[in-house]
Structure formats: C-alpha cells, structure tokens
Amino acid sequence: MNREMEVDRIAVSVIIVNWNARSYLIDCLESLTTEVCRFPMEIIVVDNASSDGSPDAVESRYPHVKLIRNTENLGFAKANNIGISASSGEYLCFVNSDVKVLPDCITRLVQFCNEHPRVGMVGPRIIGRDGLLQRSCRGFPSLWNMLCRALALDRMLGRFGFFGGYQLLHWAQDNVREVDILSGCFWLARREAVESIGPLDELFFIYGEDMDWCKRFWNSGWPIYFYPLAEAIHYGGASSANAPVRFYIERQKADLQYWRKHHSRLAVCCYFWISCLHMLLRGIGYQVGAFVRSARETWHFKAKRSWACLKWMLSGDTRSGQSA
Image 1: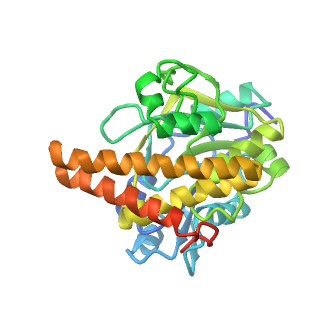
Image 2: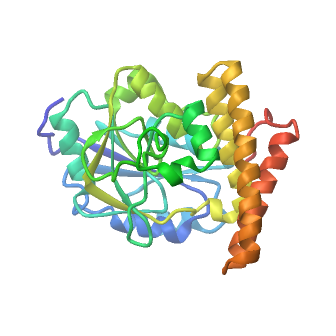
C-alpha cells in the first residue's frame, strides 16, 4: 500500500450503522470533518429501518453521505457488511452512531497503520460522556476470567493481571499495545485484512460480533492494536436505551453464541453455569443495594435486569434466534 495515499483515491470509508438514534447520529456526522481525517474520506450510513426520522435527516442535511435504507432491522453485523460492500476505501472505519470523533483521530489511526503494514485493526482511546476513560479493550474470554468476573474477583483484585484478565483492569489503557479484543464502537480495519478473513458473522444480530471478528483477525495472523493518541467520545446506549432489559439479554445470548462457535461443548457448559452464577450473585447484590443505598430506582432496575437474564438462561430457550 502506498504510504502517502493519492489525493484522488478514497483512503477511508467510514461506516455507521443506525437504528433510531437520530440525535446521536447527527452529532456523529457533524464530527466527521477534515479535522478528524485529512485523508480522502467517504461516509456511509446504513439505516436499519429507523422510525425516528434518522434517514430523512441524513438525506436532507448531509447530501455527501451515502445513505442505505434497509427495509427492516437486519442487525449490527449484517448492516455493517452491507456498508462494506458499498465502500471503496483502503481502510474501513466502523463508527457507532453514538460516537463523536475527535480531531485527528482517524488521521492518526491511518498513519499508525501505514507505519505498521501488518496491523489488521486498530482502535482509539474511548472517552465516556463523563469525560473519563471508557475501557474499550478486553482479553479473550476464558473460564477462569469469566469465573473471576462472576465472583467479582476482577473488581477486588483487578490490579493483579491474574484476576483481571478479561477487562484488563490491571492496565491503565494509556500506551500503545496489542490487544485481544477492541470494542465494536470504533474500529479502523485494513481492507486487505477484512478481505482475507471475511465479513462479520451475520449470525450475531447485535453484540458478540466484536469478539468473534477480533478472534478471526488474530487467527488469520492480523494483529490488533490499541492506539491512545487517537481519541473519540462514546456516549453509549443509543439503540439499547430503547429496550434496556431486552438488550441485556441479547448481550448474554451473543456471548453464549460466541462460546458455542469457538469452544468445546464442555467449555460451553461450564461457561453457562458460571454465567448463571454471575446473574444470581448480581441479582442478590443489586436487590440488597436497592434497600440500603441511595438511587434505589437504579438498583431496582439492575436487579430486574439480572433476574430477567437468569430467568431466560434457565428457561431452556438459549438456542433461540436473535430477535429483531
């Protein structure tokens, strides 16, 4: 790849999947200026049949944006794949609709990849709406680190890598390094790598596709890096806020799906019961918190969410397909 990209070629295709997140989407598009990316850039919005006026707003306010209107909610992975098919950039930048990209972010990520031609994917430092670091890197899930999570050992002893291996709580996420998993809220992927490993797995409706794709990147010899000198703000929950309990269950469903794809039956069985333990302990803890702490509504909601997920897991319906 030519390190100094020709001005008449699309260097970066920014792909944004949207579902009923109009205000976030507008802010995201407003942030995608030449201050963010000095390389030639195209922007593609794939709308999953939103009913909040999102696609009409994009069409009227941003004529330079390539808008794809799906007639139904096809899920996050499939919609991103549609965006990939419509793109022409040498790099594919996948940005959630609830992300605001900060100046020089994409420029720095592209420059990093140009300087390291074997890097398959890179992600920036993610800041939450509160201005604090939002942890966007994880280790691959294992039975041990999932048990540590269930028993909250990662919270109590997370400064020791042995106990905080999944969420990497022992690492301040303040230096450039290889990582197992990057959160799907912001990826910059090399097209060559994507073409070699294939598109996102469309069996993942929402959630889980980030773990799966990162696993496939590594399995195919394409390293993944975290690059904190590039930054973006992730407000979070743009779509999941529409049905938070359902989306919490969808996350657990996707995690089970990932384990079935990449692990043995015995490992999946062990993971299932560790997850049940996780939900049981969280449900009890949140229920107690609702009686002894302030912000009782928040604690009641978290307890309700954990009980609903545990009920779903024990219902015997854990192999059902993803809901739209």
